[in-house]
Length: 106
Length: 188
Image 1 (cartoon, each protein chain N blue to C red):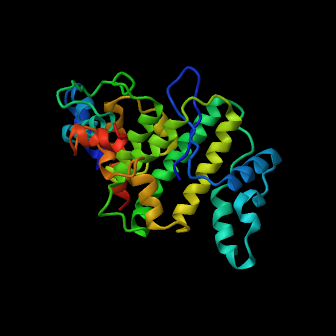
Image 2: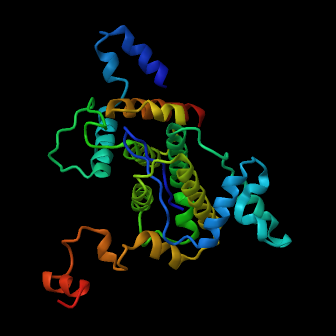
């Protein structure tokens, strides 16, 4: 399903390719988990590009966020994938990809 | 089960954790095994002294506790800590089922209990010490997952705050009044 979606998008303007990589509600879910994990206040500004390190997370926090996302979306993130996650957008993209793969496998 | 992690000089985190509940005997065992520096399966540590009818558990323990003798560097130690943390987090659902913790605590609370324990040993800089702490942590994790512990152990060690009051796990401003809080800490 993920590939067809991307196939459709590429016929439109290339600008949209970025947005279709992760759905907005998924990004906001990820943001909620990050906020809860790092104990940020509700009015803290979180953009999809904000990096975990900028938000005050150390490396253990990052791993913990990835585990929380694993639990929330019922996916299993491989270790090498997990090393590359440094921002919210990357996390949402990876989740999207994994959920798409599981949808195909199931 | 929550252990420790290596800390790294310039970067953030990983910390090792020496669980206060570890008995000294396992500590010595860990030292001994660590110094042996061989990769044989008998390194299962606490598996050594058990009787023959515990062979299945021995196998389980040995399988899970296999740790290479030395971390070459802080980086590798950090990796080990994260691997351990991931393994612990992935075992949380089964732990909650074994001990019927669904009413008492959520998975994310257990996760933060684990990371809190790991952070306690943040300042450790020697990879060997970190390995030892990790070994202790793996042992604890195995004990918990193979149901060698009981529910009150888990609740007392990981769910409830250090002072033994459930209110302690939340922010300290909740609950009783100022007078009572001071009263609980001392007579004055």
